[in-house]
Length: 113
Image (cartoon, rainbow, N blue to C red; front, side, top):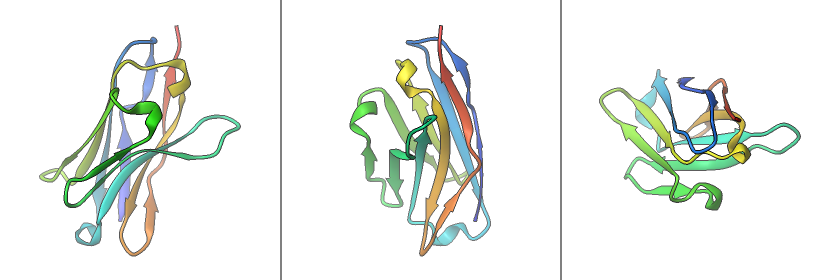
């Protein structure tokens, strides 16, 4: 499975960004897709995941602001991020889970005025 992430950038506090991650390869065995992030000096942490049945899990810090969705036709997972805060600044990584875990390259999100 290969994962290609896109959509990061610089945004002011309160703004929005949409991240996308396209999956290719042996995607039929994927049972969950998600986004993680890692800020400088911190451990990588869960942002949100969506399972093949549609159930979702969000980090408490992003609940009500971020929405994860799956575009089945495009084999992609999206993360709509609203009301962004400086604390959301991090490298965001796409993750796919089958019998093993696959990671995409990171996309940088910077929230700053």
